[in-house]
Image (cartoon, rainbow, N blue to C red):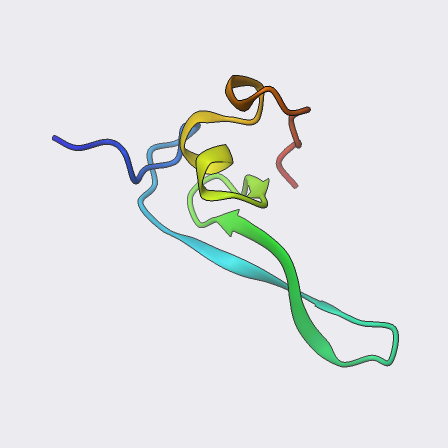
Length: 63
C-alpha cells in the first residue's frame, strides 16, 4: 500500500484549505491547510506527509 499521500499523524488521506476573514472582513484562503482526520494545520504537503521536523523546520501544533 502506498502511504505517501497520508497524514503522518492519523493516516487520513485528505485535507482542506483553512479559510479566515481578512482585514476587510472577506473570507479568504489563509495559505494553510487542515487534515480532515486529526485537524493538524500545515502549510506544505510534505509537512503533512513527513512532518516539519523531518524537513528541518519548526513544527506547528494541531488546532
